[in-house]
Image 1 (cartoon, rainbow, N blue to C red):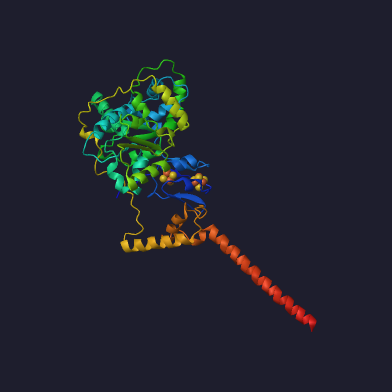
Image 2: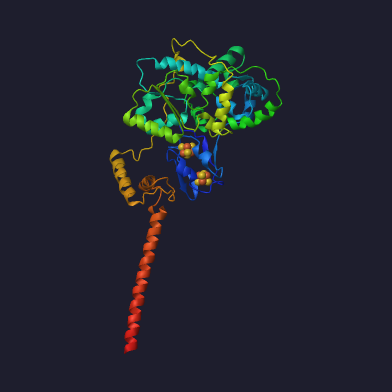
Length: 442
Ligand code: SF4
Ligand code: SF4
């Protein structure tokens, strides 16, 4: 089985074991062991929440760099729409696209253009009578991985149409191959400028199946700092941006849903809210809803861990940029959805982490976890190195930790032993005094 490649990693030297990340991880993937955080790769969904909250900058996203451009004869930049929201006083997207050319890219294909194509096909898809509703957007890979891990019954609700970045990469490669038939496909480097580590993992693990057209993933943050300098020297950029309001709208929560032109939708952001929505759909369904957009990051992709600007400031900037754009200049013929727009059916995330492969043993272990949990304080303080008392009980049953790591219980035992010692001392002192009195009376 192919090993999952994570993009979130820990710098052990910087980690103070403070437990901040432990408490915010939505999948309970983090433990504190030997005074440092440790990420369980089977549980991590690369949402980047721990990168955002670590006060010591000990967590980071691993991604490619602009220097990798020299490995290709022709390079293409795929800027995520969130990139445009990073710049203050930006009056036109042309400055950003023009700046990417000046950084050395031979072509730029905006992911926002592909987002408009995906929105158009989504409208067609939602009109089909044979689909399971509500349809859940597949655009946020952290949410899709969360569904695969914790909500397997909702898998069939996930939109089977390729996400915009994949469509952008395919279209970009087709264009370059047509213009440069003399260049081998392996010499064309498609660089996705990503706002978050979840999308890095999406690419690095080949979740688009055999048709993966993205070669490198670089961060919005890195490109932002390079672009600042180039853009500050540009007075009249060439008019090269091709995206419209709908495409740019995908950068923040609600943008994808509003492009569906159907008011039976729900849009939520922040991983905790996403989990609540998924729980509700799994438990009670959501009658009347046709489309659900969930973004792991607050504010949507503009809130990704590889961006620079506050999500809500970026969102406000995008709103003012959108005002002067056409609605959707990238509209395909949507009478039929072409086959290449669908994901491979056999692409699945490997997320299983059973207690035991043996069913009877797993059941016994579950019973032990419940029993031990009842004996724990139930305050989920994290001082044992696990996020909750139940997670701690599970770690004990799996022999990954010892019960004496619970500082609350150890403190109680310590006080009990002090009380006992005090009682024994008092008793001993009492009997010594009465012996002394008796001796004195003699
Ligand atoms: S937040 Fe997590 S990674 Fe950062 S110092 Fe605290 S324990 Fe370590
Ligand atoms: S990236 Fe998300 S899921 Fe992974 S360890 Fe960090 S907070 Fe947990």
